Image (tube, rainbow, N blue to C red; front, side, top):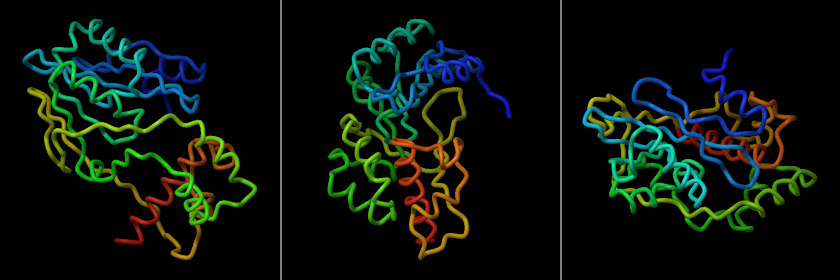
Length: 236
């Protein structure tokens, strides 16, 4: 296995930010920091179309510093915020989508999000009652719940964007000269035992860092993903 971007790999290992990087002609990757210390950054992609319009994919977390970072990145690639035509969010997690509303307000860009993601938007965040219900349903041992509670208490709010356009699987994005299509990737967990708890199933899966090394946000995220994929499989 090798890193597709050595600069991103090195920056992630060092806990820093990589530079804006040309991925291929007319496509740039821009690191956008994530608050809270859970992960260092997400990646915003800037595309330039055949008629010199610009398009953003996963604009990132919305705060003033990140907004300036986006403006600076656009300047670096020869654009202004007014040149942005569309914004696409691959999913509605705030570290990928939250800046969409600000970009639209400044540029008039059309915001596109997959239809199923739009239906799942919950601007209220995760209530304490929902947290405890999830822990019980997931079979999280009592001794391991405090680390997840501490992480959730410190999470920033989850105000999420409004979609101007809902996208469907297989649909071509409105980017002149670039054939880029929506691909649904709901994922699945093979051989799901309907009587197994989410905690038990998650322990059996292969995680990049290894299950035993997951903590805080990463363990909570792993449990949430396992629950989603298990329920998807059981409903098939």
